Image (cartoon, rainbow over all chains, first blue to last red; front, top):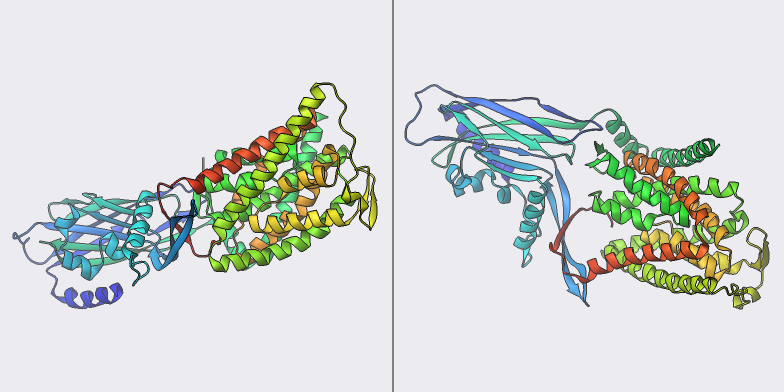
Amino acid sequence: MRRLALALFLCLTTPVAAEDVVASLSSNAVEITTNFDGSEILIFGAVRREEPIPLNAPLEVIITVEGPSRTVAVRRKDRVFGIWANTQSYEASDAPTFYAVSTTGPFDEVLSDANDLLYGVSIPRAIPQVALGTPDQSAFSEALIRIRQDEGLYQYNEGGVILRQSTLFDTAVQLPANLVEGDYQMRIFLTRDGEVVSSSQGEITVRKVGLERLTYNLAQNQPLIYGILSLLIAIAAGWLASVFFRLVRG
Amino acid sequence: MQIYLPIAEVSVNAFLLLGIGGIVGILSGMFGVGGGFLITPLLFFVGIPPAVAVATSANQVVASSVSGVLAHLKRRSVDLKMGGVLLVGGVIGAAAGVQVFNILRQRGQVDLLVELCYVIFLGIIGSLMFVESLRALRKTRNGALPPRRKHNWVHNLPLKMKFRTSGLYISVIPPVLVGLLVGLLSAVMGVGGGFIMVPAMIYLLGMPTKVVIGTSLFQIIFVTGFATIMHATTNRTVDLILALFLLLGGVIGAQIGTQLGTKLKAEQLRILLAAIVLAVCGKIALDLLLQPSELFSLSNSLGGM
């Protein structure tokens, strides 16, 4: 739905845009090493125009970064015979594992509700609804967003984009330590009076490297060898500790 | 120092992991329990996804048990023959337990079942051990002799076998059944089952406490080794990097624990284990009974537990 809207929008706006975005990233690849502890990516760019700056409404910039989607189960606990147990659970089939929205000002002022609906920018609009058709689906969707916001996986960063002289802009997006590997989509929107006037897209690749890569691949592709290897390491460690302590005691 | 775990896909403090491994290793060496009942909840607490925590702690328990068994072998406090008999039952039980676990997972209530299992078994075993060892402790203080081992129905069954290290001449049926029950529960609860095995060997089979610990560790190696391979091949949830840190702390802890264990009296050892078991039981029971601050929870769909 959103992808369709986006494609539609690209067809409509690209030829007639009076203002265009030229953007870049501090790095278009994030490497997860063994001591990875979160990362910061710098997104910056400029507005290119053929005409003088329109004076009717101030220019605003919205930047979103969206992580790869994965199925997530949302469960709710209820009291059953005095015990708190999971009673209901629904799956959101493609909820992004990470989603950050940075803007130049308060979200309501930089983007109109109609445009938000069209482009799927705000967190509730970007995250697919959980369990469509159930009586309390909104409670489940809200819970998904609330929990991920608490974990720093979904972020609103109002005022996080700095725009200089309606031309140059930059922002820093914090990627948390518990990052999932995959392709992260970046979107940049220029708005005036709540209406999107131009947009641009980019991609950031997040991948495990070195030992992380090796371990992950082995676990996925050669599970039996990986399992035996884990066992052997465990046995060897136990044996070595025993030998070592015997030597120490002498 | 933060460490990114490739399978769990979270970043955790390395010293925290070493500490958790160490504490569980000490318990393992002292009491002959694998420590799975403690390490799994601790890993949940530091933010490791449950499926990864269960699978990886099985691997970690293998390491601490090997380290412990080697120390016990030196002191000839492992009854290998009894261990073998227990293992026969254990493997059959574990294979059946995996099936039970899968059926319950499909019904979607496996979390609750696992928690209830913890509360019930830890509660019963913890209180029984606590009361019994308190009584034994009081008796030895009063200067009375420990009671002679009584002959009960266990000694009247057929298929008798001599267990020299334990000083027993009993039927193989009770040990096989004990192994079976422990194997079943360990597959369902994701633990080695030492906390059930140890009291069963003391009270049901009448084995001497000093032999019980080494023998329990011996059979735990095989049960958890089997579980590690199963988790690695079916769920792909064993995190080697996480296991490395846990077992580094664990093997050192197990050696310290074995030394501590020789310095304490058997009754004191049992009272201490009972207290730890009851504490974990109480914590899980409270979680079930008190209203949680967040009613909703998220889990990726492949994580069964």
